Length: 190
Image (cartoon, rainbow, N blue to C red; front, side, top):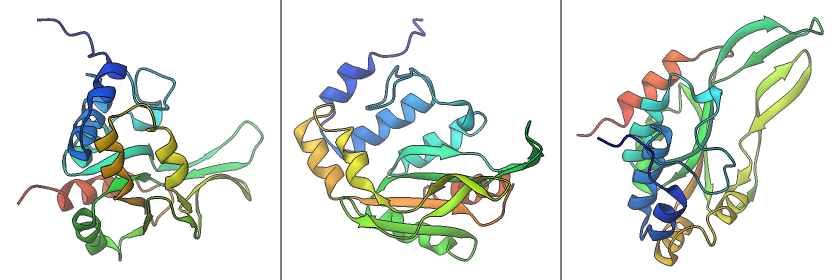
């Protein structure tokens, strides 16, 4: 059996709907497709190590994941400042998926925007001492949509533009397993 990943450029170009994009997103995080539009590597970053199964499940539930990061316990950096990280994932989803996820609002920071909406409050997901080195949360869907223009079929892009740009962040610094388990449980079929 041939285990080489599928040629992602061709597969994404043939995608004809949002469901096809989500399936390709799942296959990419599983290492079965060798590219993702706009991503310059043939696999996920180390921040996704250990949660690829949850990311694949999110994609298959109709949440096209674009970026994610793991929550990490506080640790001292080389400069002596403490670095902290919150778990997060962002991407595109339909209204019904967004409504399901909103049941977690007491446990997760959740924001959704029209696909091309700009603005909104950002939340830090990475700090070093008092300095924020990574934040998510503002409406960046338009920028994210641009990576798909010319890389996917016309109908797939049109359906993607109709979706919501969604940002999910763990409330607690360093929380990781609980964040991913909440997402997995919420998006289980049935």
